[in-house]
Image (cartoon, rainbow, N blue to C red; front, side):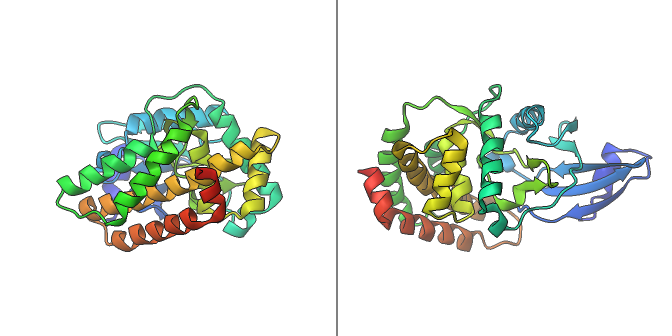
Length: 290
């Protein structure tokens, strides 16, 4: 795809120049320069509603993140396509090893806390229902669900019983390394398409497992976030690391059934099923679940 028509659709007869930004296997992100200003045009992928994505919720979440200094400024929302235009954020994606350093972990914790403590956003994100929804969608679309699903869902039911009392907060829910930008002063988070009211520990665990934090680094993240380290918080983080990978595995399963992209979603799902099995076998997880 050249995306010239998409850019012309948003900036007609403006002589806009653009380049395709890397990252992302659901949408296409374009860096656009118009009249000396730079923007990012996010062209939504096909059938993303099957992944639980609501573009109006993404818009509200991005605006909420910008309001607390965490996300990019929203410039426009193109309907009916659901394309999002934000100001281009200067900065770089920190290397994963940098994200595990104490100073940057503290900045991540502050950024997440600022968003979690912000105003409510529309939409909800319940990882326990999402994995079930992904299973139904995959089957309805003629796909298959790995045998590991049944065992993982039984574990998830036990985890859910421990999480039922927490009040939902605004969450990002997709804290991959590529979704962080650092200009040396401000740490911003992009890609809010899975945002919704949910469990703050899903966000914390999602960041932890995606950045392969060890026990000490996860404890530092919690200490920076809460201002103290409590055993109950460490247990919650450990359990929700499992749910983060379960959601990611089932995302791969449903994508294998609906996506037209040339990407090995089956292998992606298998990788995350393998990682959640390793998590479930760890002594710290067993202790937290019991």
